[in-house]
Length: 178
Ligand code: AMP
Image (cartoon, rainbow, N blue to C red; front, side, top):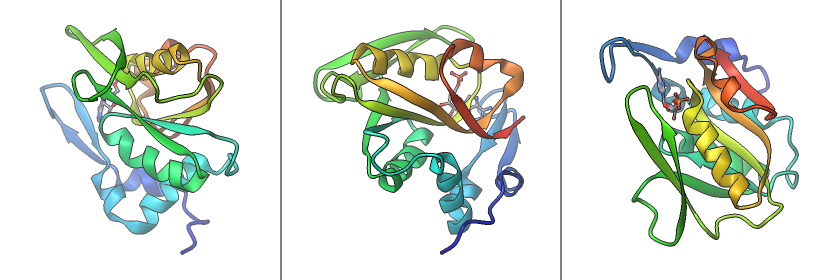
C-alpha cells in the first residue's frame, strides 16, 4: 500500500471535533476516524516517522493511552522498541514517577525503572500536545533514565495552549495544528 500522497490536510479533515467532551468547554479532537481508515492510519505513522531511518531510534516512548496506538506503530516502522509511559498505578514492576500540573489538580505518570538503557535514543509520541504538561512529565522520566529524546512527535498540536513552552530545547514535530 502506498501512502506517499497523504497530506496532513487529509488527516485534519478526518479528525472529529467533539464540543464539550469530556467536560464543558473542551473541544475534544477525536482521532478514531483516522485509525479506522487504513490509508490514513498508515500515512499518519509514516508522516510521524519518515525523517528517521530504521536503526536511528532505539525506543519509541508512547504516552497513555491514545499515544500508545501511534507509538507502537511507529516503533514497528522504525524497528525500535516500544516503551509505555502510563498513568500511576498501572505498571507492575519498579517504576519512576513524575507528577505534573493539570488545569485543576495534579496527575502522575510512570515508567518502568528498567525500560530504557542509559544513552537510549528516544522518539516520544503522543496523539495530541495541549498544555504540554503530560509530554513534559514523560520527557522528564526519559531523562531520569538517561535516555536522549531525539524528538517529540504529535499527530495534533493545539498551538494556542503553548505546550511547546514546556518542552524547551526539544525538537517538536506535529502534523495537524489548531
Ligand atoms: P496536555 O498535558 O495538556 O498537553 O494534554 C495532553 C494529553 O491530554 C494528551 O495525552 C491528549 O490525549 C489529551 N488531550 C488534551 N486535550 C485534548 C483535546 N482537546 N482532545 C483530545 N485529547 C486531548
